[in-house]
Length: 89
Image (cartoon, rainbow, N blue to C red; front, side, top):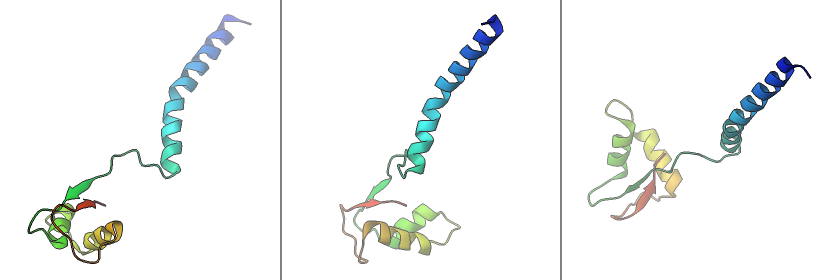
């Protein structure tokens, strides 16, 4: 084997070793595994779904879709109680 070929084999092995962690992360994401931690919110006294959704959506956005997402994600019947932990969309 020539020196150049040995060097290219080493470069290829190095590139492959560096790419494996990225491929594993992409495979987990495509398999439905979310690498981000789940966001939650603990309901306080006086909170409403509308108020929570308004904070999530921002000042210029319509909170109605976020209210629907909150209700569906947390299997809510429209009533929330203080101390309840909600999964945020």
